[in-house]
Amino acid sequence: MGKIWKNLKANLRRERLLTIANIFVMTITFLLLGTLIFIISGSQTALRYLEEQAQITVFFKDDFPEENILTFKSQIEGDQRISGVKYVSKNDAFEIFSQLNKDEPVLLENISPNILPASLEVKALNIGDLDTLADEFSTVDGVEEVRFFEDIIERFKFWSNVIYIIGFVLVGVFAIISYAVIMATVRATIHSKGIELEIMKLVGASNSYVKNPLVYQGIFLGVVSSTIAGVAMILMGAIMKFNNMFEQGLTFGFLPRLYVQPFVFSLILFIVLVLSGCFLGLLGSYTAVKRYLKY
Amino acid sequence: MPQIEFINVTKEYESGNIALDNVSFQIEPGEFVFVVGPSGAGKSTLVKLLIREEYPNSGQILFNGADILSIDPENVHAYRRRIGVVFQDFKLLESRNVFENISIALEVSDATDHEIKNIVPNVLNMVGLSAKMFKYPRQLSGGEKQRVSIARALAHEPDILVADEATGMIDPDSSNSVVEILEKINALGTTVFMATHDEKIVDKLKKRVIRIEDGKLISDKKGGKYRG
Image: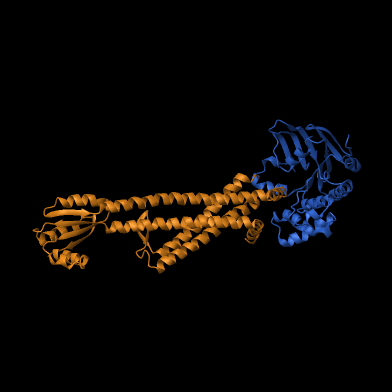
């Protein structure tokens, strides 16, 4: 281990400027990669929140008795597509209306609770079911009108998915950039050490003696730059925690029911980045050694 | 058993140039053998085949009875550690001093720092360069560089010392001192295999001479001279 570290240090010292430049480029790449993952997760979390808030408001006719509305409420509460139902009586509706229009007393004077309709606020588990549920409710006896804000949610869903797809494509692109930078660095080392490697070979160095330090160099570059970027992600997570952002937690697009606190999320991201750095370093340097080291 | 045996070895390059054509010879342990011939005759190819830097198109090359062509690529290094090679262009690293240039040969065989500190001064003493241990190649003459190259080749006590035009880039006086060192090494039991077109040295030493021309082995004489 001591010898590996000694050789690695010697390699890095000889190409100090190149090493610093590459760590800089790769750190930026990993930073962008981490930030993108945060953005993807943030947009997915916002979408989940909006989806959970998505509701259908079922307004009932003025003469439809409250008992019937409550009976209907109990019936639909058992529906697996529905996550919650709230009854808003005429009086509740008047209170909400009053709150909303508290600065317009003239308007309030002319309104009484009887004018406003009683309603049920129905939340669906899945935004995709809103349409069907709305259709079903509109045919129910006593229902006057069914409203839901499908367009806004659908539009947000569209853009959130666009961020999700483009984000993951960019994550892939940045991963390829990191891989290419590591490969170019190791390639440059192989070229600059051409005669040294040739001499090593001729005086009896084993394949692994020549190749391993170059592979370690790639892993070192990947791990150092991803660690710096990972620390920045932890700071970002800490700032989010400090500012009470995403208190409910962040979600991963592909694991919709899992919510993780932003700080914990940043720690996971740190580990993912460092492992990716290590893997890309290994892959990039191994490919360079295989392709450019004629041994 | 011969230490080295070339059996009907033919080497043809992709360009169509036949560097060696059905060459066969044997070398016994402790021999001093010159391989002579004009430039392009095939001497360097012979050296490259011997250190398994290249493969022949046909034939066999045996080292102590074992076919070197069948050595797994992962294990070639173990074979190369038994052969010390000296090059015409010295192949020294300009950024490393004499001690460090020699220690490369030991580092690659996982020698400890203690072993390196013992061996390097010994081999430098053998080639008469103890006083220049911490000089850099740019501070040495051509002859001295070649002696460093010999010291490096001797570092892991090889069975054979292969010299490819070792006197090709140095002045006559330095050539003589290099050859004297090779004779001394040979006297200690190491086989020396020297490719050269330095007529004076070959004629002076009166050792075995293998002559190659246009890839063909023309003559093989003990106590021979450059021109037969």
